Image 1 (cartoon, chains in turn cyan, red):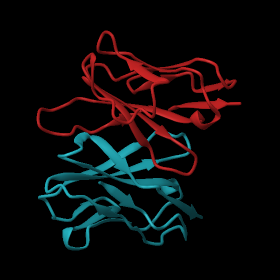
Image 2 (image 1 turned 120 degrees about the vertical axis):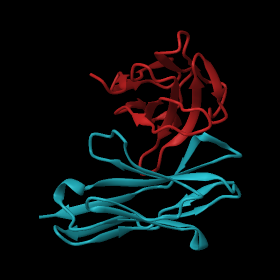
Image 3 (image 1 turned 90 degrees about the horizontal axis):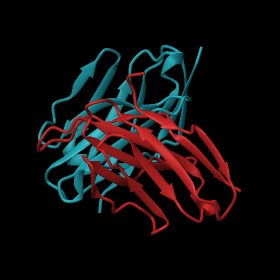
Image 4 (image 1 turned 45 degrees about the vertical axis):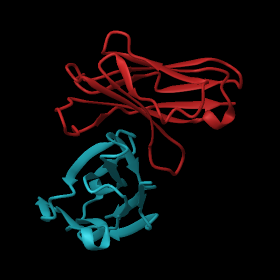
Length: 116
Length: 116
């Protein structure tokens, strides 16, 4: 079975603080994909990143960075110098070869509140 | 617009009624997905279409739920004899499937269903 755990239900920070959102996953697949999505108040999920299980290289995109560690089954997301516009619910998700790459399993999400 | 369009955005119905939710994917996207998101939860997979056929319907909760995509574009999710537990936001997504890979999913804003 596949499972994604986002233990942080809600995080509150003040603008310009750095914040890390945790994601821990479980899968028996050797080939799988990990994702992060952002869900602003409008409700539309916005794709942020996809990482395959063979690529453990960390990635940075502007203020966003991701730390993938297979040894701890984690795929954490860091926002540097947070801004009010970063306020949203962030979901980590997983898809694997055995259950079908098209079927994403989502965590319960972390609500990020960035105050001015 | 160029994004995934879902109608209605809000639907209130009474227990036992029949409901149809429509999804208009991004033009040219061959894959279409339905997810369901209950309050405070992450999206849960319902069904995935590749072209006109349902490639994976393992997430449909029971036989009251059915989805079609007759011409490989617009899809309709149909719920018979609605129950209060069906209340949720129904999200549609589409992607341009690359063979052997998992394309980025583009989500609509969802249809919020409330069953009284």
